[in-house]
Length: 328
Image 1 (cartoon, one colour):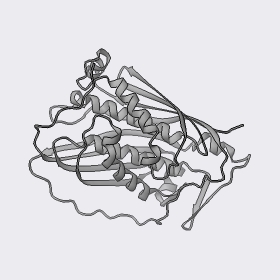
Image 2 (spheres, one colour):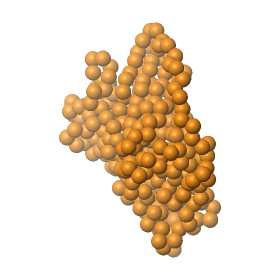
Image 3 (spheres, one colour):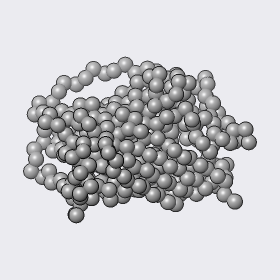
């Protein structure tokens, strides 16, 4: 079956808006640390907002069959809760196609950027300053296993979707909590070369009828599995270009498995690398982009009569393995 974008040439420009949200699920102590403004590599809220805005504008570059859209408004909202960090992203345009996939991509990448900031247990932050903890035999487990207080990303969904011939009024500017304006990359200059491997998983819930269409190869846009795998592989190699604090990385292998289950589709990504850092963020980004590509391929079949998505949800995005062993 051939793969193609939907032709929107003859559609008219109308006002379109969508809000997507998701949760980075954290255990108690880390959630409290994040709410203070500093943890891991610095200011969590500012990093989330920056990354989600940047990603929303770039969604078409990663989700292969999306149309480039001239977005007129992107607004992230960060809420710190006892069980983690909730992010919602609203996108607007005057255009020929919807913006729910753009908002979903922005929300996912924003949560992934938060993950990247708070995972750094090897940094201690206080009084506006963050200092790295040097790796020792006592702290080496931090560098191999990652942060056990991060459970994963769940409940990524479209909260609302609007299509109207009349634009809505501007919202009042929300009050932003003041947090210390410090964000930094971890200095990997003196790190040895590592052989890294990371494994991540995720799932998207879909209607049974949609799963049958995928299984039988009858999705209008084409081969869902192949499109999702290719999009995920491309994303893994561009994580540094999308997540502000991720280093350039020598990715040596990306494997993406896609399986249909009773109530949805699961994605498993294995990334390998040889560099001065690991490949956990690359693996997680690949899994998320694969899931979002699946959503984009089948969204025609998932909408209800009001154009909403009552079933479709991305959940259980988690890191199963994150190893980083010195070469030699």
